[in-house]
Length: 477
Length: 77
Image (cartoon, rainbow over all chains, first blue to last red; front, side):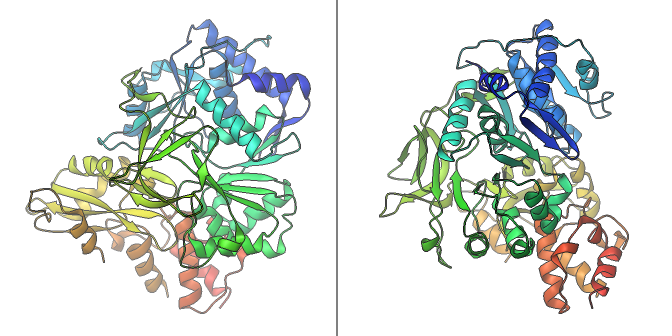
């Protein structure tokens, strides 16, 4: 098995069909395959099967070719968020024990292991030769997606070829994708939503259109773009869909090509979902649920008749082969599925799974229709702009700063959607807050930056001496 | 007007260690204003200053700094 095989088959069926578009550039299946082959062959000569290749490129055609090339050669792709602070990027490269880091141009300043840098433009200048993707065991790891970790450092979720294949095939079938589909792609490749954009699409001959970055700040230009590209399917996060529903000039934009919108990553505020649903009465909407460790394990096709203010939508029923179970005592959702991750990647190798089925940490219940409903977290994890954020990772970074004695991080509910981190600090004597926290911008990505700080003399504690997070939340109201 | 917007942005949208040192030309997007923040900012401005900012003009360049934001709002006052 190799997750790229369906794409190679598709290339012989529809070589001239459009595979990707990015700004003014478009590339056909066969031309994309040539790039993948060049990369695959180049990497195979370096005997990289089974090792990690970090990708330091923004989402786009080159980055997608890199991912397909790495997979063809039997290696593991580790997509980096190049907007992350240097310390986080270097940690990930070190933890993954990446053999190479592929980017564009010269090695960047932030990179500690610059001897491992490969310039994609140089690789593409190699001679073009046919290359067949390496046949692999289905349990072979294909991707490592780093997310925020509760131990204070990012953790790598290792996904096998089988896991990607199983999800990709389920999505293709469930959403009836075919070779006439035009799929919009906005999710960065380190975000699990991109698995759909990268693999479901090319397995059936659809085309993928990368949404220009700046359009996520300009909702009516984004809808105009969706219209111009005749986008038929888009998998994205609720916060952006809310922005479009409110400010996207949807009434005056021809979105007749759009057939389905899939959303995941955070709870869709009902008010905005109703607005979106009314503006796009012909579009099928799907609420997809699942942490990176399980990918989509539960989904609900939005039933418009059931959208009522003050109520929340269910996460629905099991997706594909997923077996869902709810813990009687804690109401925690547990998931067993072929989509499930293989374990966390630590220090260059796979750590065995701590437990199977996977405990999600999410509290759920079953309604009378047999659908699962989401009721928040059992632990302190936050959802910020669709990203999962562990307060412990923020706390660790803040604690390392000079002048900070203690700190605790909680989530403030955002009025529009999701949460935002906020911190309570105990400062050492004579320390100025502004000076103390100044280095934070270089240590944490923007979605992990606390939006508020409160200074206290001592952190509130429970009778057992543990930090009283409820009391801390109270400080922000 | 700028004062009210400053207060809202620094209280509700982004944290800046020393807001008094943040100039009217400094880049708000670099300081962490994201698409959700822009949405809330626009809704705040429309409500506070009874102005309608056309959807077609919502663009990173119009909200990049306090000065560009003020100019944009004044065009619709």
